[in-house]
Image (cartoon, rainbow, N blue to C red):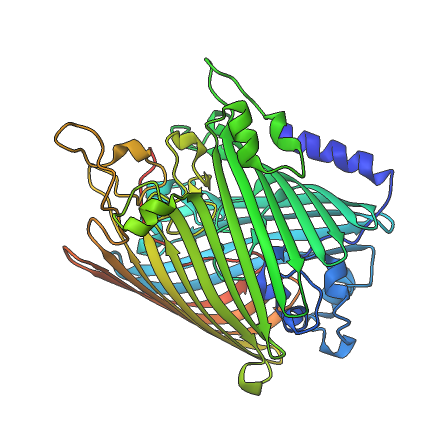
Length: 532
């Protein structure tokens, strides 16, 4: 509530200054009509930084004939074109029904609605608000996840009794072009750094959060400072006033070194607000927008959780992008070379390729990706400072101690969108001790040696008991409204979970109805921990 008051007050103050054209939602389906041009050879867009500015989408110079319209003329009147009305709004609607089998079998549904609205107050200030409420009966594996973590993936706290849940989300921002090269945005929502389906830096996997974002674009460089407030929901029983608070401060520097090569540096830190004995609040040391956090940590003797990432993206041909990420939490090269599985060598990396107009086929997008995350990555000795928000990881949905292969194909034909998405993951598990799987457990929970000290070595992906998880999703949809990515859609999900010990499970989930992709969803989920 207090954050809402601050946001509305800031909106009112900025409205008296200037006006701007705002930001697109963090949704690859909403971005789809522009993605081919944005990623093409010769484009100066920094596509690894999302959400995209509406001005960036305008710069694609897509002809009106290629910009999809709604099948309902009134929606076009309300929403306007990208360069149209100053006030734009539209509905967000969803109503699907289906049948699932697996750990539980039976009829499933998902219904809900909301709206989105944008207002351009002049040339440099934009106001945005969207809200969505959903009631649904989850398939067995997602219901199990909601009960273990208390949240539905990326969509809010799971209220209600199994198997029916209700959740809601709202996003809003005021965006101000303070200078030709500088944008300042205060809001609540999600951010994404990276070119992949996953991001090992910052993804949109977790629930929305309050943030202040400073974006600076000069020459071939884009530099983002992101300050956020996150929640630790453990022990709060769904009461927001009881949530534990923590803050994050992140940098992302993107440099288009040539027409084909982009280099990036990511830097982030998480710290808690402390407790009654040591109240802390927001640490002003981390407000400096051009400083590296590790030197600051050493200078102030901080125990905070700091991470460093490197990105490399290479364009090949006209529409093919090879991309990679390296994320470091802790690194000691001597231990890496020894190969003894030292617990504190916490790294993650990603390699992938994304191709639009693949093989010269108009509307065809193909993606292949591999993610590798060592045990204990994103954890911290003080679990209040782990890399998570609202019970979910801020990076990969499986957390740590895993490797994953992703293969995706999407085909667009006028209003029709066809998708075939596959992933295969190999991950470890815990018992009474931590083997680096649960990012909500402290590192000190490792297995004990005879002298009762924690064992420092032997931690590799797949230990203790390996779990193999195959996820496939097939979709065919007809676009009703491209601005909210709402479709009449039929979909089928196959999920096969095979543990190295015990019985496996197979989930089949078939559904049909009206689906809104205004926010990205990540249906590939697995229970890696239980929050108390």
